[in-house]
Image (cartoon, rainbow over all chains, first blue to last red):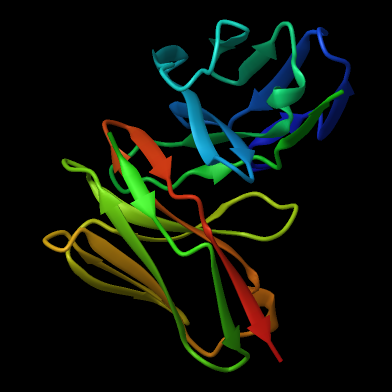
Length: 115
Length: 108
């Protein structure tokens, strides 16, 4: 298996622009998680899905952030409009059964820079 | 709420043993896990403790004490490649919440 695949690896954009991050989870994994990592705040859980359904989006910082999972093999995280404070590494992770002794498999991340 | 506390940095010598502590303020979680992250890389799973006690995986061991709200990761026979950040995490209600990580520096 190729593992969790994220694209793009790097994204540089200007404030106010729309940004879309993409993720393909490991085939057969029922859970998909979006995390954001910064030096100040560490790894923050933004939202997670179970069987393509958003279960908890309490970590989504603002209405500018939205996430979708239209099918079992694809998810997007969208920021519109983007702001400089959104600059971070965004990780997607998947797991077979969610928590309860299930390890997360992380993608390589998207380094987002908003100028 | 949930919070996990880890030291921000730890320094050790190659070949030695180092312990990275994690204290938490949460209840009702299933277990404590540990992840390793090298610079520029993604977090990778190391170990998981569902029950109190010690779990050993090669040079790495992890410990959990629910009564003390405490856990640790023990790394033995340190190698330079072990230089990385280490995160503890708790899982509750299908959510996995991470601490801010401990940066491990290894001296030759």
